[in-house]
Image 1 (cartoon, one colour):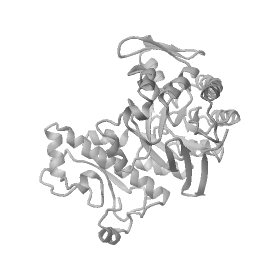
Image 2 (tube, rainbow, N blue to C red):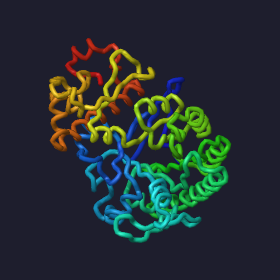
Image 3 (cartoon, one colour):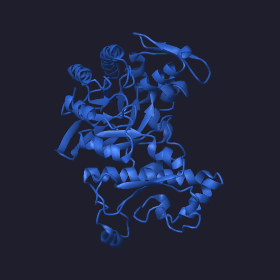
Image 4 (cartoon, rainbow, N blue to C red):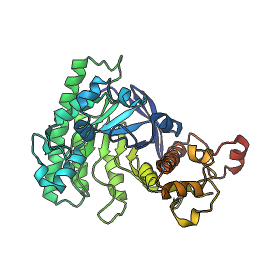
Length: 395
């Protein structure tokens, strides 16, 4: 496979790279908000771009259920459908299907063929096979796609985890075969037209022997990128540093490393320092919808344990606070002069503007964190004077 990723720099604090896609070049590390159903809740694409967001994640499972991949294809693909002319990655939907069946066994089952399940929306039956997952993602027209895998929780019994890894490997081979068939059908020439990048997912739970086996077998098949399967935390919330570090080390140096579902700002910094390149999560917008804002702590490096704090702006203590969310921030909410008192009022009265303003603020926080990890923009640390001179915050 032609390579569309290059590592530009690597050191103890992480690595910096560049990914070429059909909808633009991305510098790593970068963070993708979850536009699960082809939308980041309550925020239009222009506002996302203005916040510094460069790529989004959509979900195959949810778009299969509604409005349907064929419908999106008729609309010109997911980029045209949602008016986003920048890179999009699609998750395979495997985790969502597994979660549905695990919680409601009567809704379906997973077999060697694929996942058979009933829609929680209208009860319709669906069969999501590895081949079908690839077809759906081609219909969506995404820039980066993920193989269907068989995800299991980190505390799954050893036998169950082993079987899931072997099935993940068999499904990855089937995905790769179907992927190459679709490329041939569309006559995509890697030297003329950019093909979508294909990712597989490394499973194995907390068993490093299993993860190593999975990563090495996937590398033998050959993919553009490899994701970290299952949660990056153990069952009581401890960060799985050793597992994440060793899994990254098992992935080829010239491949993209995708830490799926990560996460909090602190966990992103940790994962980046362990060699992971790209991240996605609902946290910044979900926290914003619940009245919580991320604030940088002045004078602290992102590599400090407590370089930020999360404040709940629905609290009574902000009732008379005339200050903006963060004076060092240049997001739409802070640059627009919206006070903490006003945002608290919006949440108290149920006005959706409050959720939108905090979501935009949090997304800007994440985008600037990525800039800082890339070393592309001036750090906020010790930049008070520079910010004042330029008239712009260095958030």
